[in-house]
Image: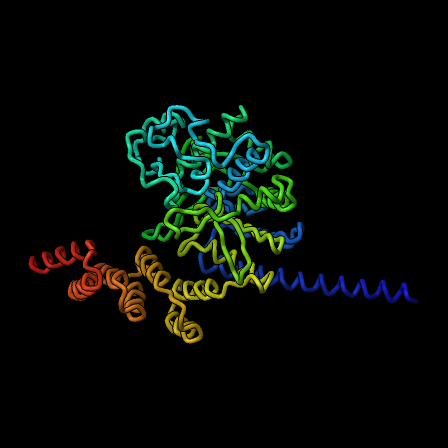
Length: 476
């Protein structure tokens, strides 16, 4: 009798657990479908791993708008800068093996560096604190340029800032990390990453920074053309030097396996991971970033991750032994990767709820709708509950996105709302001035640019626009 009771008890617990997970999955699925609808996302893959088990894995939409091929487990999404996480892990694998140190000078491994780069260390590359010029800022550095030829060209440029002082996102940093990896291992960068992190799924990942290259099952990113109101295929072409920073295309199952390996310390031991996730001490005492990883804190719970191309994101929650992966191929209004990650996290574990981000997502969603008559009402309802929350940057971004989508009158209303909410913000009035200028209401544009300049006498843009508008009025 006792055995029967025990068996019944265990089965009941299993049934309740299964029911809860099914309900959770349904909530995630419903949310994701709504996010796809609002942002007109062509294709999307979402995965959640908790306690080393995949608790959610779903595929939505199409790989291609041209042939409507459905997104599936074999779809390889380009994850752009999320690729940097694999480079980070590769660097720390070498550190764990004693073959590399965060304190090593880059010049120990890479020859012919400019004199100003001689004291840049490995830690400065990982934390984007090197001050080295970013090769993407120079149009004469061609995709086919090797690392050494890129360095030779950058030798003509001055350092952007004092090494170690601040965070400034930079692709040259990761090119140099790949050169260090190749020097130490004697392998090509991509072979080292594939052999040491993807040996069990090599057929589900590829390195390429060329959108025009024909690769089976690779999903191409789409960019939304606000003038034609249509998606167009991305045509970005970069060379091998971009691989460590943005080169990976990967399936969701392969990414989920990578996440589980990371969680189970198959790549790095816990001590090394803790080192990798330590905040770097910047000279300016302001910037917050780990060694290649963004740091996020919600309700005193830390998580680590990165995003890429506004179409992919990965976030790992060590305290909860959970990871969330999001990969898509485009969006038409607002880059939602962080909101999607946050929203799913809150559905899986209420302790991971970032209420500010949820509110911001709600505000953006309402203004994004073609019929957004309730958007302002929704905004004020949120503010009534949370009067201390400030959405100045959010409203400003929404206004400019509306302008890019030729929704100028709606943009003006959002900019006006922002000035009402932030009457001491020179930037808010500058944006409202631009909004009125876009609809050729020069009188109100001039009025708002003058308000912006009064609030910030150093606003040269407002000063230039005032002169431009006054000249236009004189010519009438």
